[in-house]
Length: 97
Ligand SMILES: [Zn+2]
Image 1 (cartoon, rainbow, N blue to C red):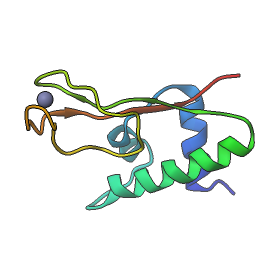
Image 2 (cartoon, rainbow, N blue to C red):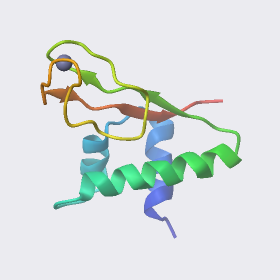
Image 3 (cartoon, rainbow, N blue to C red):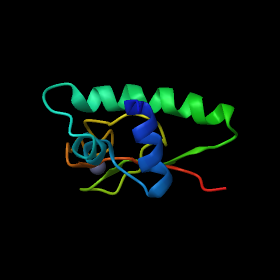
């Protein structure tokens, strides 16, 4: 049996993904699917930590002014510096050992 979390782990061991790319890769649809991915990523981070692996986070960035957000498992909606909503999503991948 392959759970969704296991699929996410397999994907992130191959390369980095943004939350929107994971929604597409897992064929999720509809409202709230990105929020679901965020929750799954938080669970994945705990699971892989037990195996001594690390979830690498390339932080979100404002595409207007270049402001870099903190490396967190969330998708910010608005830039605190210029108030733009044109945000490059964070990217996640599992560190290769
Ligand atoms: Zn900005």
